[in-house]
Length: 106
Image (cartoon, rainbow, N blue to C red; front, side, top):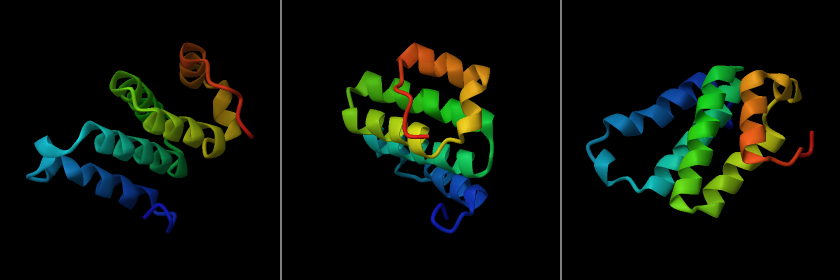
């Protein structure tokens, strides 16, 4: 759905894992990958609040887990996919200051 530019459908699909019977068995690194891609869907849907929630959850979870891959994934989405105009939003600025994100390519 992300590739088809259908962010709402992507978000629904990403959320569906929560109702799956094997949910308790999903590794945290996989859950964080889903969260990061939900953030990407939120960007496509122009939903700043949802993106900020996903960004914070993805970064915090990756740090707690010690997963450089999930952290880098969240950072890459921030640097390359997030609209430049969002960088001035208070919630984004707070997060970038807290985690000391580099400026990125935008």
